[in-house]
Image 1 (tube, one colour):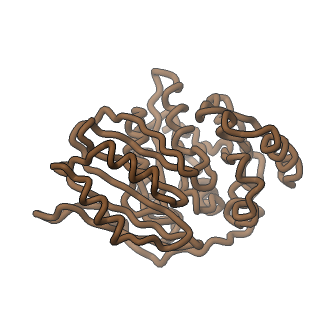
Image 2 (cartoon, helix red, strand yellow):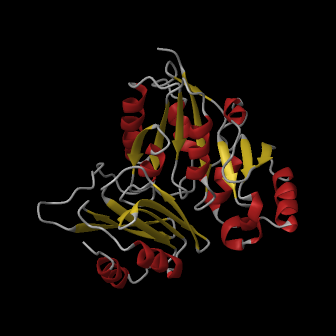
Image 3 (cartoon, helix red, strand yellow):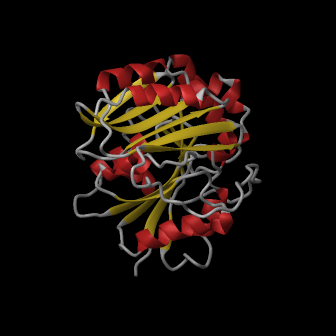
Length: 322
């Protein structure tokens, strides 16, 4: 088979990776079929539902860094997608992961006949560059330090100071990546065809989770919902999975997500107004209607500290109207 052009799109929590990939899928050539391997820190796997709306073949690796367990979860997902013979493969690692080992696996002899590894695209919200929580985080710096192209996102929300900070900050990077700036995830496909220029010289600093099997989220007969928690790299997550028979009050759900103060929230929910995707970053809730009807509901909350999960669960259950 011909080599599949492959890109890694990396970046910290909330920078717009999924939005950017959705825009790329929307603007891809009509005669091409693309595949996406998406990795999430949380256990319930939400991004797959977002990306499936874009018409891509999608495989999910939830539950932390997908290069753990000797790369087995990642390899399983890649192999399944390659068998579909896509015209392009996009890999979205967790915002709390480091792409170095992923790149090493893709460049290994196992994939040298099948994958044409193109530029790694690193996304950054310029507003984060003035926040010590981000600029002192090793993963944040390593993700961008391994990127061939660094993209400033959400430029419609960025001040002149933030933009100047991005310009000066990228010029000081020793790797001297190419840079661009975008709104609403609108990255031209031409950037995906840039060649790799950066060698793997950055040390890995993240700690892998213990070896574990990939577990599909499923409910037992008669079970209304299940809950999964995860922790690592200074972050914790809690996710809920509800059966398709659970229908949530849209207005109450939106209000709850607006009031919830957490680092990152994602959800795909079956509501009385239809199925919707909810995306919360910087306490701003964005909502998109999904074409799928009667789907299972999933919600994931990520923060730097434990939140009152039991209390939040009680609130979620009170929002079910059917």
